[in-house]
Image (cartoon, rainbow, N blue to C red; front, side, top):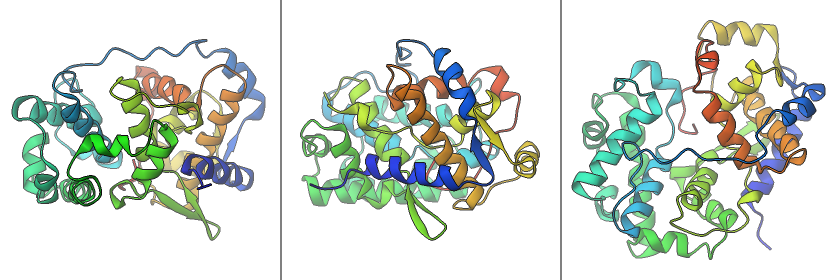
Length: 308
């Protein structure tokens, strides 16, 4: 049987958490924190301004895959042109939504030829912003993979997973567009945030009925560790906390950045074990919590990369 990336993420994150020196999980706080989580996870209704809610199934699957493929850039958010009242992520999502709603989806062949200037025009940014070249390269790969492996059909990508969320995450993890593996003490540490969240998103929207969503891990980014830190579940080395509070960028793949992501994933695994919630559901609860003023009033860890 092939190895599921979600199981590899879970195992590697636990291993890092057990060795971490700059970030630690406050084990004594977990049970109380678990008791404060909602008994049932309720997803907010889709916002038609930032999520394609109309159109045929092929278009909506294409939208979900494209948006999750470029669901990164949080380290760049302070430098982009944001829409009024929108965060960095929702600024990008709104631009992509308008493109798909007004002009339809790109075909796989069109995605393969997309340039930085093309995606910059869609999301309202300058073409020479470094993030635009990363977005274009990522969408190029999506187009090439869908063309070469799935006859140009986005629906065929999810059909290949045969109704399994972990299998879909596995498939996407094999694309360079969704690559997300760091190294810690010489050992590969996979996270695959975007590959897993794409599977969860497609199931959440009802576009695809996927089983075993509970086997997905949390989606390791920078906001969920931030929420866990502010809430007292993660404790950081004072020097690391000072750097984050000062707004210093963390190097992607550095020990402290890997520990932040891994400890958040492992903490959420423990919270899931203490509740009736899945890791993906807890991740969603904490991510939405992170949009509140209490969390926005503190600098969050930032790193410029294509992982999150």
